[in-house]
Length: 451
Ligand SMILES: Nc1nc2c(ncn2[C@@H]2O[C@H](COP(=O)(O)OP(=O)(O)OP(=O)(O)O)[C@@H](O)[C@H]2O)c(=O)[nH]1
Ligand SMILES: [Mg+2]
Image (tube, rainbow, N blue to C red; front, side, top):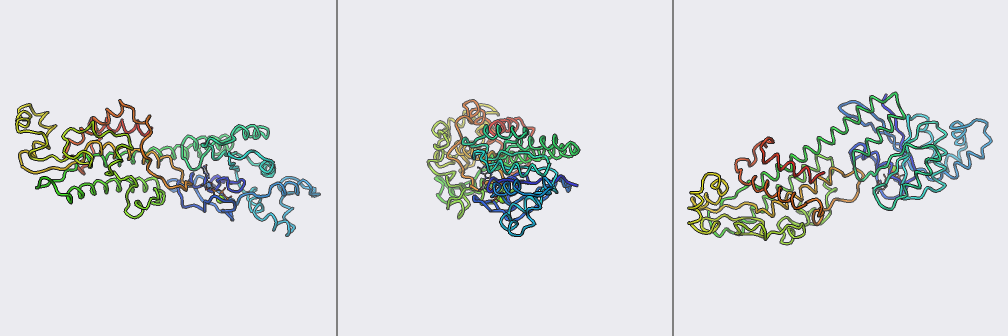
């Protein structure tokens, strides 16, 4: 039999949200920012590889525990505890008045453990204390969940003091809109200490959840590498110079579509919907980011100084480099010098040489834009890795990465590896060689950015 967890608490404290986050699915129940969203008891299994580990039971919020606790204390019934409480509901008027509470009370005898969800932004008022008194009548282990704990306006210490007076020392800090496996792990550890018979089973569950979280991040990282390699090695040939506007737009559209493809893959990987992305009209209508990759001021907003990257210089600012037959490297003398300079140099300037020798133009992504693509990719992956499935605010790509995530040495290393990738034209849309030193180093930088 799977362990049966009863999720209870005052109205609008995030009970349904907690279940969504534990299930990693936004498809369970209704979540909304008002009291009384969940009207009925609803249960769902947490299953891994076909094995049911937990039964999570969602309940309507408790609304008038003060009245119910007063009635319990005033009752002349000679029984005690849950029996006495249940008998109160024999009176139809009473059952009607406390219909939501009744649904919860009926579940108390059937569960193995109670998760009491608290909105930690609220002070621990009397009504919450009466809820705890009512729940204690069931003589079941209770784990208080201090939800909304990541904000700064919470009353964690007040709650901890109150809960200690009631001998609740195993308390879990949580935030259902932000997923951190460490929070969830602590919840499993609490279950293990309170349900020792199920220790091994919960251990397996916890390990499996951790493995899944790591695997998702690994797959996300692979998607990001795929995006960067394919965009860095994409070359569009043009027989005309100067290249036409249409050709330029075709190139840019291709890169945009690759970014969109990456984004969709991340949404699917983490089991989110399109609605979890930003809500700008542009995004909905054209499936594009609000701050377009090729918008003139986007680079600046992300703190990328394009001027410092102007090497071949043909089209900086438009997000593309144009390597033309006559212009990329200046003069024929330069080309001659390069050819004479040896294989390694020749390899580095392969594109330019090729255009020189064939008389065609090559279009490729410029370095600032590739860097920008990378930083946006990291921001998206990091967000969805930590996004709880109860989040209701769509994710908007930030205006830029926070300063500290891209320190100068890290940026230097990122620049170096991204530039190197662009030289491996044979990597375009080919299976990734994860053992290649350039890929390994780029991966390490990305891992640091994601940490
Ligand atoms: N910031 C933040 N918002 C949260 C958190 N948990 C829930 N919410 C939001 O709070 C609101 C209420 O969440 P629900 O899960 O519907 O709460 P509930 O306890 O099931 O509500 P009822 O069914 O009405 O009792 C929703 O808007 C959630 O997105 C949290 O940890 N942090
Ligand atoms: Mg609910």
